[in-house]
Length: 438
Image 1 (cartoon, rainbow, N blue to C red):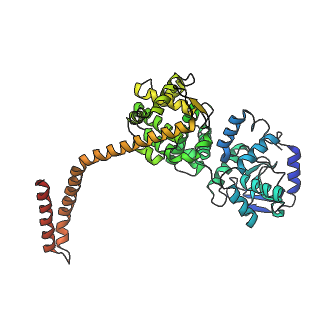
Image 2 (cartoon, helix red, strand yellow):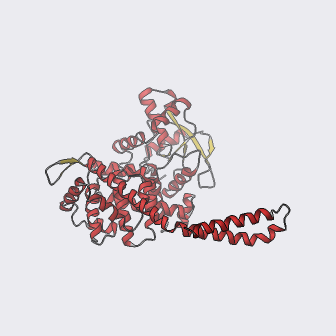
Image 3 (cartoon, one colour):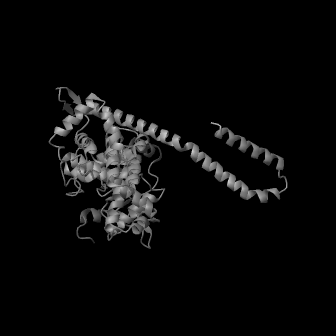
């Protein structure tokens, strides 16, 4: 038996397994895929604090509580377990899950270690525990679980969790952030071998790499906030980080810095990613800064941000954006850092003595970024209009060349219409004459 295992709990579970029926768990990686299934008291099982589905939320809980060992110190203790239960019960869809459990009960077994720690089924078990404690629902008193062997390794646990993640019958959706954190962990454990990561995740190498690159962008924004923002705060911004990571992948440092600063400002202020995509250009920062200087509130914000001691000469932000102190980005850098480090309900004192909530400043930033995006979009349309006639004529020429290549064969086919063909030739000539006359 594992010497660090809680022997009392392990012995309790071993007694429960006496005479237990075996059931197939296809995702278990060992050749012997039949494991014992038992019913365990819902208050006795322990939630996994290593659950990758809640990693980002755990990081936020640690940062906001100031307890660095909240989950690592005594993961089976009341503080860690209560914190994990709170995370599970506040995730999106928890009430719907409870209603399903109330109506249909538990459909598939959960999975626990030999000492009763849940590897799979944490959310369902949290729902059952809530139904038992608050409503005394008898069907929620026990949770049905597979029990893993006592010699299960940590690596086998991660592999099983990953397999269950991609198995439709067991899937409890990961947020993109938590999936990316899992990929990052496996990437480091696999000596940074994308093929091995992809194999373990049952994805293509390009897919796991894309998730990893999105996460690196998010790491930067969270780091810039110096503890104010958390990874879990950006679960709803996947599209923005996806488009940003793809765009900066092969761009110059200058363009990457410009676009990244604008995307980060837009994400913080709530700009839709569909608008931000118009600013995927080298001069994105210039467009946004031009809108800032037309708004008195944002001009004041720039002044406050430049003078603020927490954002002045922010080496971390320069490293993140690759700014190198370039003048056009300097103003955006300071205001980005200033806003990232403040909560929406904070109040900022402006140079004229006015006190403005950060939430109101973010609304002004959102308006400026949206305006810049609209201007960039119109400019792109104008640029497209300049080349549109030539592009369309090039396409028409290509079609005519293809028609000539197919003509000989077409004339040998039954049903060929030579008169119709000549009529179409005249229509093309007329169209060309019409263009030449303009």
